[in-house]
Length: 227
Ligand code: SF4
Ligand code: SF4
Image (cartoon, protein in one colour):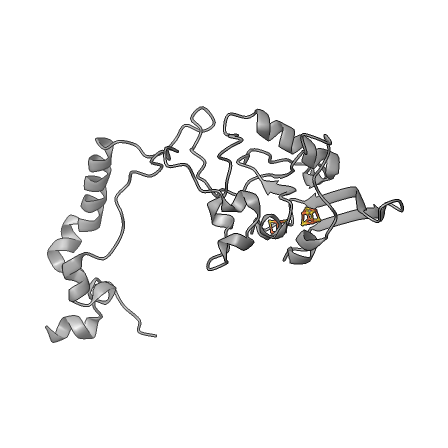
């Protein structure tokens, strides 16, 4: 690995404390530019399509309970092993009846795999991100709490029944015909996404890149002396 050093200051730069003046100039410049910070919670940030927030079990409008069929795909796909599904078999027809469905939100890594693999779209990740707690137990969601999360989400402003999709959950290169119904939907063209960040983009300037990119920003002493 090549160690790079900041070029030495010359005598004049040392006397006038050039870095302090540069810092003050930057502060002065920013005083007159538009702030990019938000006054949260008074000003809420926009939530982008594909955001993975609080988990919920989708409430089936027909049966009034969860759509989960206890196939266990989500718990098998979960890399954090934070999903537990308890079920029993209905002797009359052999179907699985979910007794409890638990997600430990504090162990979750919010990868969204559970949502991707669910064949009936029973589990989802909502736009809700404000659910911090000082009590671990309140973030250990059981079936009833996950259904309540869904009810809470459907009453929120961000819920759009027809357009609630998370395009980021689509696995790349996966045949569209094999995706679950909700994943096949696309984000409506008229859905507006507010500009969230209005700061300057950081990057290497073209001429700087041509001259050797970041290596040229802080040449080593040896390189500097060679010029
Ligand atoms: S989002 Fe990922 S880590 Fe969290 S419960 Fe689902 S599969 Fe597990
Ligand atoms: S993948 Fe879906 S249907 Fe299967 S156990 Fe998980 S939530 Fe239930």
